[in-house]
Length: 107
Length: 115
Image 1 (spheres, rainbow over the protein chains, first blue to last red):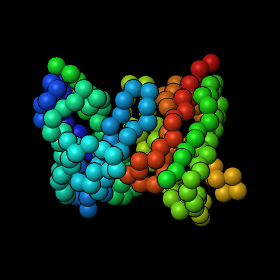
Image 2: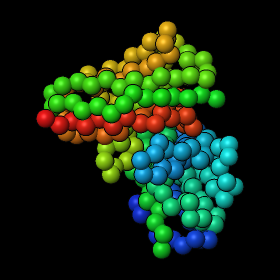
Image 3: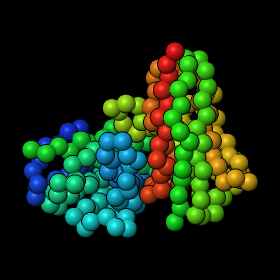
């Protein structure tokens, strides 16, 4: 199984800040990585697919980078709507796995 | 495009089984695997397994093998997730999703295990 270790678990930041969330994989794979945003009571929302591709309609302040075993989600200038929980997800090989999540809280 | 609509909340007794359905529309059902993900209260996302609607072939996470059964009915473009031998640890919201790394998810179905 490919274990996904996400950090930090909790991130406290202010509107306008730039933040990074990191996901480290237990083994290297070919960029079959997605980032999701989830708000309470809602299904996850896809932000990034194939490690760096912005999904349709997702604001350009979101960006994904990385390859191999280390991947990063960057939010360039936090907006109030961005305070949520974020998950990385590898869909390279079965069983698919998720990171444990990063809760982004407002300072 | 695509839409996935799941069945309503379920309450199951310990040791019993429940089945959640996922009705899809707006695309060719056989073109994309259906994945199932669950989320226990206050916890993260957990991939359970997937089914190829075309062949019926399935993949399961190890912890669900033997206790979760994924099926589909192509005539009504619906996928099903059945979980048996329920325990309180199975209390969760269960989601279906179209394809891998997908933007198309069902709305989620709350399953509560309670006597």
